[in-house]
Image (tube, rainbow, N blue to C red; front, side):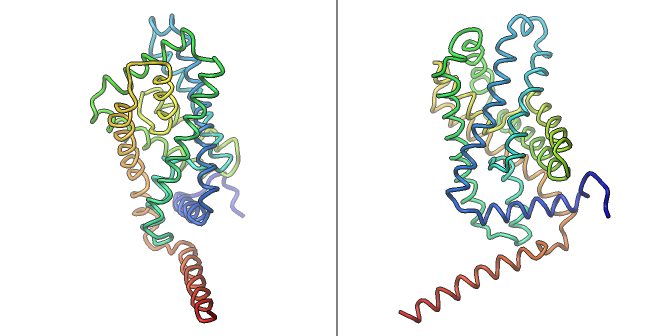
Length: 291
């Protein structure tokens, strides 16, 4: 019996592909609702960050690095809840679905279908949280939080160039996918939490751009009448961070396929998928004959 508390890298790669297969076979309505809840869960971490960082104006003026570290430390609670509840987060699927497609475990069209559903589910959950649980309940509509959120939008989406946000998106999802990889390799809850916490802490403290996390903070700044407009947010931040997150995910997923899954046949899952399609086609043919 293997007493190790973690899976081997090849086993983790296989688990991630199997997760993508399971998500591919999940009903679209369930995928959308899981993505909605993931947007809410991640926004809880984002709001916690705002409370710490926005409420530390004096410390921000004297030692901004400490504020970044403190805000980054509390943010990972959102991703922990997402992973432990098995919800749908776009940035992790940016890694697992290409891995599964490359190994023939799922069809290529599953990538745009899943990414589209999860994108809009995450967006809806984030906007719901920003409007209802952050603005309309009055938690962050007054200073120092409102001023912090408005200034955050300037430094996050207005001041940087488009290519800088793209590069920050790469660094962000590289770390997020490392966190997801490590969590998949841990066999018990405490190890999963620790495995997630440190990479996410680093990405937030460093100021990298996570497309879903920004779906909470930047629209909230627009709701609080910052200089950022919806059009500019979409053109500059949303698109750039999304593309950067894709590249960052591939920096983790593609080497994993090359290193660990060269002779892997989806653990029989490819055969299961092919059999399912053949059975569906067979049943369709029978029904047509009976007409």
